[in-house]
Amino acid sequence: MNWNIPNILTLLRLLAAPSVAIMFLYFDRPWADWFALVLFISAAVTDFVDGYLARAWKQESKFGAMMDPIADKAMVVIALVVITGFSGMNPWILMPAVLIIFREVFVSGLREFLGETAGLLKVTPLAKWKTTMQMVAIAVLFAKGAFEHYLLDGPAADGFSFLALGANVSWAAGIGFLWIAMILTVLSGADYFRKALPYLRDPK
Image 1: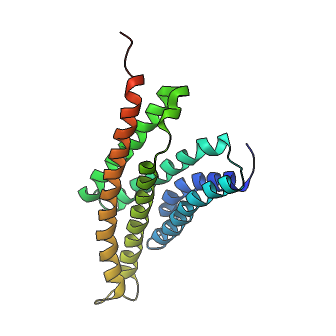
Image 2 (image 1 turned 135 degrees about the horizontal axis):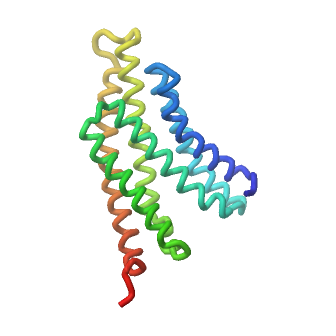
Image 3 (image 1 turned 45 degrees about the horizontal axis):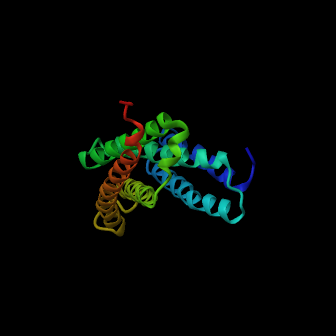
């Protein structure tokens, strides 16, 4: 592994994935929500920065190519588990979260099974869009938790406030973005399965 900036950013993003959940073990809410939000957004930004720098500086590597999608999936899956937990297993969150996690595991299994031919499952524009929408949805839902708990516990607890409006808007927008992400995720998974299907048939 080359210790260049793109690879270091990718590694930091991978380490940030479990740290999002750990925030809720060591900090009370709303601080845990805010820390998780800042950590998740920072990690999401590195997803775009490390790839751009690797291409611009001609520092693309096998380590980066392997770790980048792993870090993305770890960030999304762990964050969705956390959000599903603190949303009280709300079906509007649970349904898309389950389908997104299922797709990520399914495609990872396809790539592992295909081995050397897994190159045919290269990242597509649709897959990039689904990852972007997943991260936007998760960030907005973390913001909802931060607004809501500050509203309940802080000085703005009584009466109408922009924090209350922010919590409601974040909740509605976050769910909407998450369902859009789910649709893109399922379509992307179906596209990968279609491409892999000829290699999954037994010889006659």
